Length: 321
Length: 264
Image 1: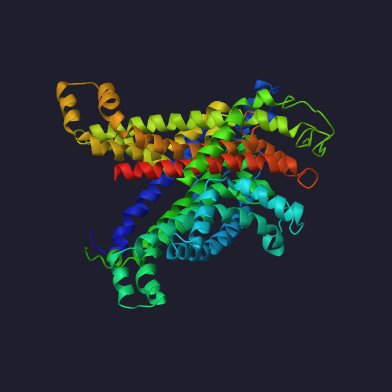
Image 2: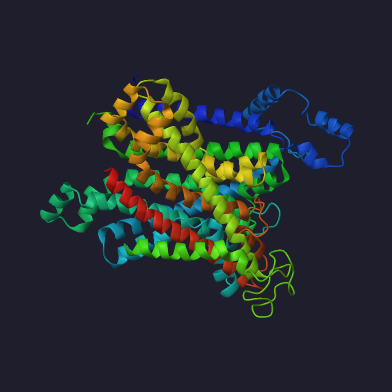
């Protein structure tokens, strides 16, 4: 294959991602449809007569073959139509505000995560084995496996119950943006941040520590380069590609974490809607949400790859090692 | 070393408490014993929840299903992953299709975030079986990768080649020739899978998708609205889940460090 080295590396990646997305959409649509749960029976309840069930099925178009409906669904996706919810509302309208709210939550969390994890990771690696490193690494190890909703529960106890500083739930007037009530964002962002920060800091610390013990860093240090030069010339170039990758992977992790955190605070994002739809068996909404989340996740992974290519000279220029 | 001791100690304590818990509980997990949101003292050691049920008894009853479900699901995922991984390591050099048939689908599976997997599978198959399936599916691809990497270092050895030449079946090759040599790595991997399994099972309880009546995750979500009235109903399950998550993580971190040392 010819072309710019960046393109050459990214094209197959993009292709795989698109393939995955198509596969995911098919599995989600056909797989979920093939399952015993049925939006019609869950909506009408166990006492519904067979005639009423058949009538509603026909009304919702569920009496046609699943492949035909999948085709229509995919065709609809191209002009932003995600189908109709089991409650009859168009899914696109149900999602529109919530997608923005969730993106805002994740965006703020990543925006804070990147500088904090880089700073903490580098600091811990620089002082490895000493007090600061023990506190940072130990704290990260403790937090990394605790579910987001447990961290959120602890934050509610501290900030809402004991200190009474912040609201325990993030309820918003219908249609209002979280930005007009910034206080509802604080605890959800912190809950996401803590768990992601623990993971990102651990990886960045490990990468920076490995670089710092390398021969070229030792050489620079022995030739009398000050710490700042060392950081700029040797450590950052090695750590940044890893860090970017970790931030985006953590961002993908926020997809799952946000489902839990939005549920804790009743934050009006897509995670909260997803949980509610799973519980009521509202398949069209679940299908749409999984597709949206899957697409966001694959986009993040492709972006991570792009960032790594741009930050690594050997990959960027296509010159072999 | 201290981390490992701390991890094992804390983990052992919690596991013993969880396993004998239902025997220690003074009340049923579902029966109201005092007014809703009674403070500690009048309604048991940790007070009562929004329906007047004893928080301490609910904790003691809720731990066992949480822990056992996580263990079963993590083990199922690990065992299937190990089989797939070792099989690929043994067969891939001779049969090129194996990698495409066994590992590619697993890679696709690995691209789905665990919580999404949980929600999808539980939409289809609500209840304990769906929960175990979802958690096993979430762990399987990573277990398969680890098992494959470990088994590849063993697959070319003379005793394996000799067994292949004798015409031994897959069961013998995997179970007798390779498994004993990679068991340490697989056990360390099981530790990691358990961390994730526990996270997911607790999350399912929290999302109200578990079948247990007193899952710790469920205790958290039920206690949130009344946290200002009866904070203990929230503090106790939060501490319980954190204690297990942290101790398992400390232990598996120490074990996998050692295993990595052995492999390298």
